[in-house]
Image (tube, rainbow, N blue to C red; front, side, top):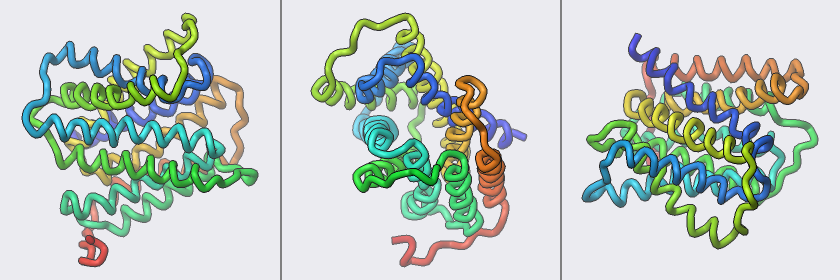
Amino acid sequence: MARNVDLLLTAVAPAIWGSTYLVTTELLPQGYPLTVAMLRALPAGILLLLLVRQLPHGAWWGRVLVLGALNFSVFWWLLFVAAYRLPGGVAATVGAIQPLIVILLARPLLGATIRPLAIAAALSGMAGVALLILTPQAALDPLGIVAGLGGAASMAAGTVLSRRWQPPVSPLTFTAWQLTAGGLLLLPVALWLEPPLPALSVNNLLGFIYLGLIGAALTYILWFRGIARLEPSVVSPLGFLSPMTAVILGWSVLGQSLSPMQVAGMVVVLGSVWLSQRAQQVPATVASPAVAR
């Protein structure tokens, strides 16, 4: 029962992340991806720091900088590069490789076993995402593909290392450290590469508040809590729920069409998430030394 509660609470995070596209396109000023990413992370991180009133110490300063970069700075930067250079369906499908990378990284970094059923779940999840949002007209841009793969690898590494490096603090504090570090790393890049924001409207402010408090602070507290309690190979496939939520919101809020292929994609995505949980209950196949390296 406790495991099911952990799964449900962790799944809330990617489900909410699926609303990011809607909020960004409908409420935020366009053309400021790095600034938006920085404002999503840094104010939320500082607010949480004021609540917990606890800073890293010793080796945790370096570890938090690495995790903040992987989970936020590098990941969001490459995510935006992929989003700008690729159609949304291609970008999301490329990013859906993340659970597979988590499985492979967890072997050398955590000593986790490689389960064939977990790999099958990751591959089926990618297929489900492709059915959800990939179109026949999708174009492939090499730099966009590399950015999408790099972003997936960055968050995958951040997920696995967040499990390996578990500080003796609450998920709230751990989230505060990482959000602040990620936002601080993004700050100089955003100031250097992008012009100042225009005067913000009420809708802009509401969008930033939502992305910061709900889309970053709340969701990452739940996400890092889940990583601490569950295997990364269990947590990562829950990310497939994000594009599914985005499609549902586009249909229900923006009046976008919902095709039978997309409905089939939802079924496949949900099936892959179930299969990834089932994979933890069957005997595992330990990776060979060649794979482990």
